Length: 257
Image 1 (cartoon, rainbow, N blue to C red):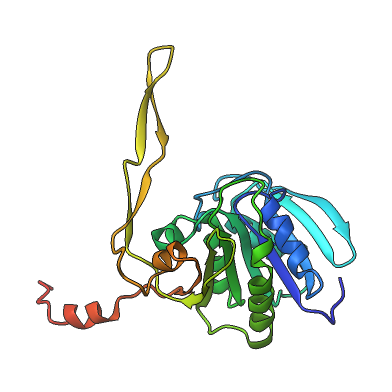
Image 2 (image 1 turned 90 degrees about the horizontal axis):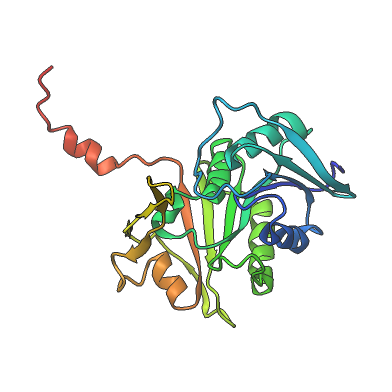
């Protein structure tokens, strides 16, 4: 790998062979040296989980000029940790999660393995971005995303991001974007999250399913509203989850110690 070009580490939660990841590599490979380290199969919903009791393995899947592709049998966060500690010979200039097959807006941010990649990079003080397309189709078309993905990648490589801040970027499935909105995450909930089934052998089992509900559908400053109205939604996301007004409020509590 050449040291005179930027270095980008890419991971995801759909697996190293997903079309979203391959599409991302093709979009930006002329911009930087790229190392991919991604799960060996889908790890959606793993958030920031890492493997404390599983032995981890790395396998080099492909290498050519300016590109290495590795897989790991762990979580998306494991992939980032393994790449930083065992593959890369220098610190990456940027970490990208994605392109995810499916929406990572609103509270999905907290469940997403793609965002786990991005948050892990952010906690290492490496400028980090997540890209997601609101389409679960394994053969989804990512081509409309190209100009925005390239612009954001080049902008972040050039300017960086504030310490402790990463970007969660979601793209709607439309024929033409109405624009880009930098917005907050919507308040939302998942309902009817489990379905009960009866196995032919007589025991019960369950599937995690659920339906997402936007709890503030008329709020025009949210990522969910933006996506529903054909906009690319960019949500600056921070590691510090402290509620500072509550610190002040709790200063008035009369604790019994």
